[in-house]
Length: 317
Image 1 (tube, rainbow, N blue to C red):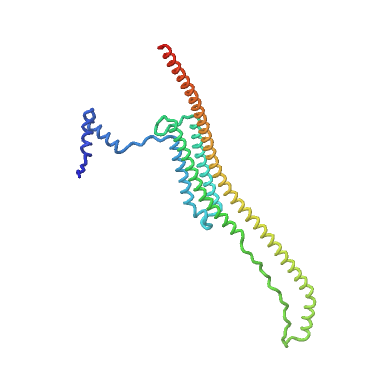
Image 2 (image 1 turned 120 degrees about the vertical axis):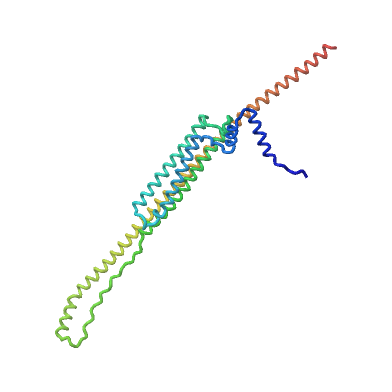
């Protein structure tokens, strides 16, 4: 078996000699070799710079949510005004990121209509331009999904806040029962005189109607308290349902926004597929026309050739 020998150094020496023979100096040769090792980055397109800026904004939004997560959820760390401020800042972040994504979408549509966008790897092929546009659509879709995942995290935190608000607004109520007033037992002391006993009996007889009225008032007060308690429970239940409806409305709007983006993407793909089908039909019709014309030409050619052969045969005879 032949022994393998490394000829890399010989190849480098041969390249160096050839470069020197073509007029390269040692400094130029060193700079050229270093440029092969450490390549310079090609300038980025405006679309790429805008996409990177949008991605940095979304990551900054995610860091902001992670930083203020405990402050937003924990009731003992911040006040309601501070939590509302955090929610407002997150809303401003989300709105700015969505506007940047919309700008990228509009730029893609303008380049697609005008055909002025750069092609893939600097080529001038139409298919390369379509590949670049598809790549840009994919970048926008990835940014939209990343933004939606970040907003979904904040939606979970918001639902936890709503649940805490619901739990705080539904305290446990217990109707405190007033202690029943028991009639005082008659004194059994043998030291009370008969006259004092008669006076006590007369006082009890005179206060009996007042006790009946007090009992009626207590019953009416208890009934009114029960009615007010039931009314308060109904009001709090209505308030709880309103809070739940607002939370569900926000979640539904988020899902509707996501579905709208997906529907828009599917619509664009369907339009592109329709254009491709129309272009294919045109190509097929042109191919059919070429086929029919070539068939006619072949028939005419064979007819002329046959007639020429017959004429030559007649002429020779």
